[in-house]
Length: 484
Image (cartoon, rainbow, N blue to C red):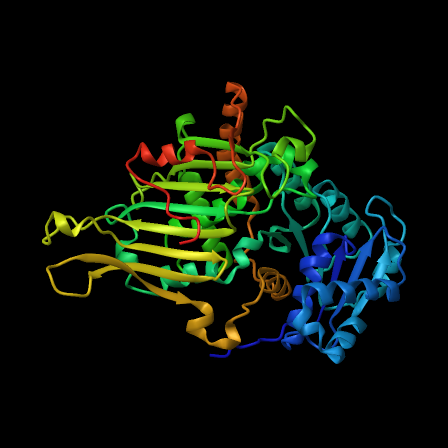
């Protein structure tokens, strides 16, 4: 099966912070892969902008080295690499200064899509938005792309949304969450709303509970200052896991349209109950073979910031009343794995007797690694000697099911940046959605601060603190393996 490549319209893409880690490691390699796939028009261009005093040729050398590291298979094509680099330009520019904006304006083309990617710290978002508008760089076809964090609480998120709204309409603002660009996340919507098989069962009558796990084997190296201010709740739970929860729990939208989809996601967030203190577990990793402990890593021996959080949430609506959602995420865990497990209820009556054991269906959606979907079903164990039941997986990995040409699916940034150019906001968060997520998150953080809660230590390379297992055990349930 060969995927279709639909070219986008001509565009100018300005990457503020073009010399930074995100641009060099993710954004530019994603653009290069789309260029190699034939999705670019002939006259599209990328303009890097940063404080570094590079010439355009020097910047191209930096980009070339980055592509050799992060898009190695495509960069081996020397002709493609050289042609791509000819589309790359650079302007030395300080976001806090009013100089050099005229030089940037001179490189832009009228009457085409004009996207500005804010690959910088959030403290610069408002300054950039103001200067783009002040120096007449904004047009009706202008889009701005904003990376997380979208504030650090409800008040700051509202302030950020307000300053962006002073200069751009909501339809021009693209708040990017790279998890929504993952192929399996989008397949989650296809599985739910494109198959009659699941929708009649997708409710509290048939689903016992749902587990959402985003586990990371790495620590926080290179992000110490930011992470010790944010913690796992702000860095992962409030955005990435919240988005996965919304896609699992949302009602079918009337159509696959940006606002229709985001309206349904917003309803889920607003239906979330407050989380009880005994339904939250926070953890902090200790030293191990993979490196120092959390407090030594951040250089703060008294830090009470969590590197792990697990919680039990409830969506109070007709579909999900009484069905718990268990969410967990953490650093320095046993392996890197993002998976959603939909745990269906046991059959109401077993005709096979007690010896057959208890069996239930599990739908596992693997986001990383080895993206795919597994449905565990119950069958008879082969052989004579009575009816013995076992659970076996019906497994669809994308590489096997869709052919060798799909073994390397597009990176999330590839899809999302191209969606910006297309003007499709379906996979981007709306301002009211961000604020609703913070309105749910803030009381959780305020609660443990008021109680003086200290994160539970856990071993690096483990599955997290033991209290997370107790959270499930109290309910007569257990976590599925991090990577089923």
